[in-house]
Length: 358
Image (cartoon, rainbow, N blue to C red):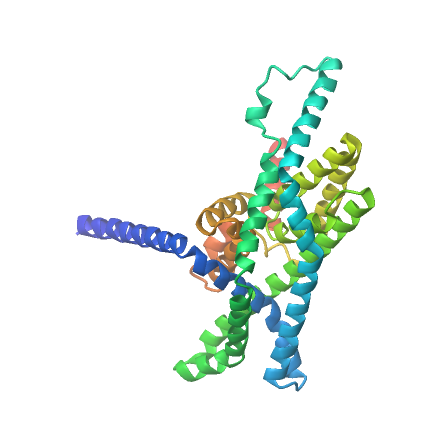
């Protein structure tokens, strides 16, 4: 009796693994369709609270939706106007910046050699390619630009999602035989997603604006472009801030030398420390986070499946999975494993350490 049961368990594991592999392969193959749809979904999640707020104030649904969509289009046009020329100029001058970066790097190595630190014997150009960060930024902007060519379809999908969002709870109430508990879990799940996305968007917007202002004061070229990059990659905690900082610091190094590059790096360090260590834990709560390992693995996974846009969406997608796991008692343990270390666990570990030292 035990042997057939063990074989059945192994078979279920194999079937589950095969299903997961098939789903991932299907997502990767459908990335050109899936990425615009995911962007539409995230935009709709962010825009849903203003839409519901207008509806609760007595504004008709169609008029409230029109107001929200006009605001989105105006914001997109303003962003495209301010950043579009910077993106085009950056693309045009990218080979020049890579050549200048290599020259500056060679000069820095020569200066270090004069001080008695000879690094010429190390294959630094093969290990650390100075133009790799610039190429990474270029590929990410290219991926985002490719998605934005479907802007009309994305906006149209957002409209239909928001129209459906207003009536979906009523449909569930009519479809379910006992809607009380199911609707409570569903509404809690949607509320947590909206709260996370809304707060994360506002915090990311403040981060990007602060970075843009700081780089403008330093005189670094394309400050709006680097601010936009900081805004997008702030959705990826810890790792995203590093990726966003590297090309801007390199640009400062190319233009003004090591002093301005150090000042730019200090600005990034201060902004990301204040935002990541002080503001976000207070505003969003420590439970609304992921462990650093999960962030890194999700960045690799979603970037591989969905391309450069997947890197930006990696943490929001993983957070949705974590919130979904938290909404059920039988899967909450897995959500705890995905999250950061809890304050209770950290306090207990410190208490055990002090007890052992005594």
